[in-house]
Amino acid sequence: MREVTLTDKEGNKIGQAEILEAHTGEGMLHRAFSIYVFRNNRSEVLIQKRANTKLLFAGIWANTCCSHPFIDEDVLNAGERRLNEECGFTAHLKVEGTLVYKAEDPNGNGVEYEHVTLLTADLNGDVGLDPNPEEIEAMEWRDVSNLKEDMKNNQHAYAPWFHLGLNIICK
Image (cartoon, helix red, strand yellow):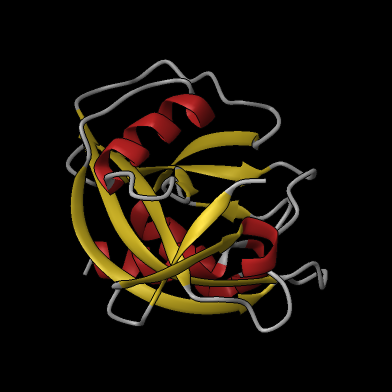
């Protein structure tokens, strides 16, 4: 089974753990990344509805892509790899910041406790989408202003890390 990198709250590596172990009980703080792909001068963001087969936060709307880097994998390389595996396209990513959050799955399936690197891409025009059905139920472009308003009114329809990251990136 795959392992994740355990970190302190500043993101320093302190060990590693099996991925399921890191997401059970109280959760173990570990390294992750969240990708936000924008177009039209950041007025639109590409979002995904997580597949119903996902263990955590299944069927919930989230940012473009998120995952965990392999042990000792560069986060930008991990992001580009995972964007292609999950969404079916590539884009030049850049680091926009970090956040730490902890959230229990609404169905009681585990805990997310992550030190997240926020990655973004800015596209000029459309990109061909080929979402992996094991990961993604649906994808759509959403107006950022309308999305933020909907997140306020329908908080439980969105992954908790999604609005945290979006608020950091789109101040």
